[in-house]
Amino acid sequence: MTSLHNRVNKDVLKAGLKADHTPRVTLSFYKYYHLRNPKIFRDHFYLLLSQVRVLGRIYVSYEGVNAQISVPQHQIEAFREAIHTITFLQDIRLNFAIEDDGKSFFKLMVKVRDKIVADGLDDQTFDVTNRGVHLNAEAFNALTDDPDTIIVDMRNHYESEVGYFRNAILPDVETFREALPVVERLLVDKKDKNIIMYCTGGIRCEKASAYFKHKGFTHVYQVEGGIIEYARRAAESGIENKFIGKNFVFDERLGERISKDVISKCHQCGKPCDTHINCGNDACHILFIQCPDCNLKFENTCSLKCQEFNKLPEEVKESLRKTTTFNGTKFGKGRYKAHHKDSVLENSDV
Image 1: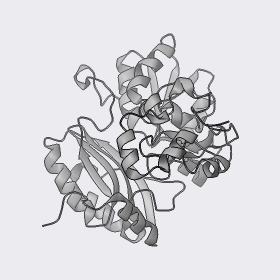
Image 2 (image 1 turned 90 degrees about the vertical axis):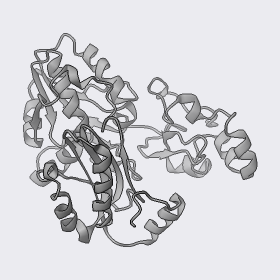
Image 3 (image 1 turned 180 degrees about the vertical axis):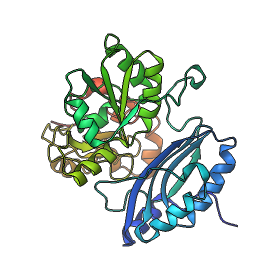
Image 4 (image 1 turned 45 degrees about the vertical axis):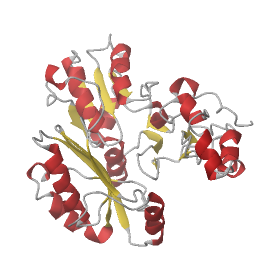
């Protein structure tokens, strides 16, 4: 019987993926759809994707599917045929990565969640299908030239820190749930303006645009396919690309370059840099920006504290990890908190 979960150690999987030279393609897709039994669908979907060697992270809930995956290049058509056997996915838009080495995921993970994106909203209080108007790259560029247009980044601070659309409002938040009320307060006196929302692949804006229409905003738009599709279409069409810097992505790559601009700084030394990494101390694991010099100096960690901790015997580390505070535990959520982003990481020796 085929297993419906991965049972292999992650280090073994990563080593196997590194050694495998089969070209792979990274892509994402989502679909809001009422699933009566997410658990049954989850098991069926896992088996379906396993047959075409899909790797990635997929969330399934009563409200639909949210997927970030990689597929062997020679299996793309087989993958399309497989998902098209599911009625509500037959017209799905696939967002293909801009920069891609095929090493974005090392295992297949399909999880049942309460929601496919944690938004904190009560979907029963408004019409989630009454979403904002989708704008392709050409339409986005045209509307953003209108002085009555406001662009809003619906992503988190660590995403917009490395890249954003020119002149966009960048909420200082850590989660999408937190962004919704913050954006509402920022725009409370601008309900008659053109409001364009954007995110990585479009899924957050599907819900956000419907929510803001419910809140009385009259001209609500969203970037079709998010930053990923915008950048692809702008490049294909030869039109101006209004996105500056890097697009943060939630896989092993942690980012794909959209423009040559480097708009952020190393969190340890302050040099221009937009490379995100997770601290090599697993007890910390904070997400932060680190330049090559600091990566060498701190041996892939965020601080001297984590660097020295990594050199301890395993049994000593195990006894200390529950009582020792690192940057990751101090700042919460394993990420550099928004209101600390202009200061260096604790114990970074700079």
